[in-house]
Length: 168
Image 1 (cartoon, rainbow, N blue to C red):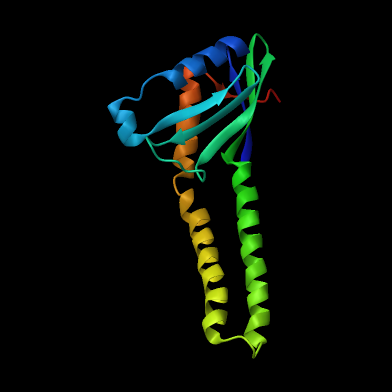
Image 2: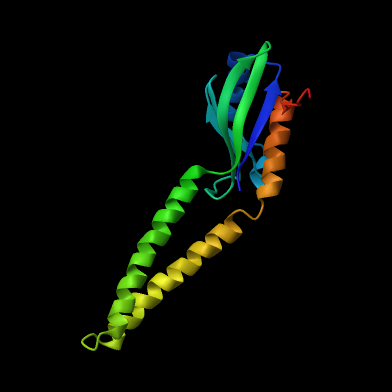
C-alpha cells in the first residue's frame, strides 16, 4: 500500500535536479550490478525513483513519485512511496478481462451444444492466468520494505533529504 511522504532537502530544486541527474547518468559499478541501485528520472519540478537491478525490469517494485517544491531556501519533496499507480490500472484490466472470459465460460458449461474439449480450456486457461496474476502481485513486491529503505537512504545521502518534522 502506498503512503504519502514529505522530505526536505537543503538544496534548491535546480541544483537538486542536477545532483540527481548526475547520479542517474553515472556508470554502474560491479557491486551495483550484483545488488542493484536506485534509479529514476525527473526535473526540478518532478521526481521518480525506484530500486532496480541490472538488466531486470520489475514494475511491481517500490516507486517514489512526487513533486519538488521550493521551500525555505531548499526543496520540499512531496511524494508517494509504494507500488506504481500504473500497476493498479494494469491489474484491474488484467482481472477484468479474465473475469469476462470466466463469465462466458460459466454460460458455456451449462450448454449441451458445446463439447467438453472447448469448455475446459475456455474456463481453465483464464483461471490459471488469474492465479498467475495473484502470484505476481503477492511475490512481485516481496522486497518492498527493503526497497523503501534504500530509496530513502539514497535521498538522505545524495540530496541530504530528511523526513519533515511537524512543529506541534
